[in-house]
Amino acid sequence: SSSTGFTSYGILLLSEALTEISAAVSLFTFFCNDFTLLQFQGIDLVAGGKSKKTKRTAPKSDDIYLKLLVKLYRFLVRRTGSKFNAVILKRLFMSKTNKPPLSLSRLIQFMKGKEDKIAVVVGAVTDDIRVYEVPALKVTALRFTETARARIEKAGGECLTFDQLALRAPLGQNTVLLRGPKNAREAVKHFGPAPGVPHSHTKPYVRAKGRKFERARGRRNSKGFRV
Image (tube, rainbow, N blue to C red; front, side, top):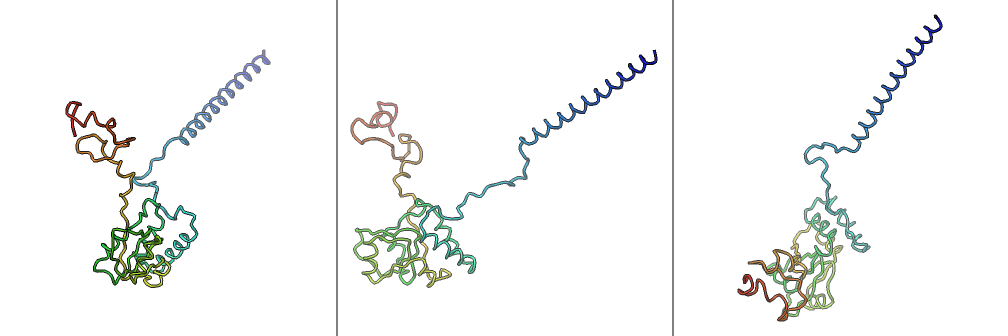
């Protein structure tokens, strides 16, 4: 009888130990699951805490000459603190779309009364055959078309590169910073309210301008409305 009592007592102890172990295992599993959930939950940030800066910090182009200019103007920005140099550096990073060409006619127009200063264009300078008289201008640009360069130099002007400008005007003194028309692209004409909507001047993507193309609804009173 004593051995039976001891056996039942041992079984009781063993069952209690197993219960405690199972409780510990379930608790551990709960904490593990909770930790896994925490891993995949979002983090509460302070307002404006994790905003990504999307501006360019270097040019995308692999042009080694452009990279050399970037190196030069990084140095000038660091050592001079000139805002002019900072603007030039920023524009050197820009995409081709954001460095539109400037025509000779616009250049002459912008430089009227400022002929003693240096015009600075971070982009190309192109010729304009509608202009007959070209004054003597000093122009700095990334690129000149052959005819534009020839006409400027023939008039007694100068076509400078940006490294030459850095030697002449390291702080941007006596310069006029210019840009070409950014929204003069063909693509921009198609942006805006839908073509055909009242007061819209957006250019439609249409195959042709003939009799059978976009001449019905919105173009005559008998077909809905007329713009």
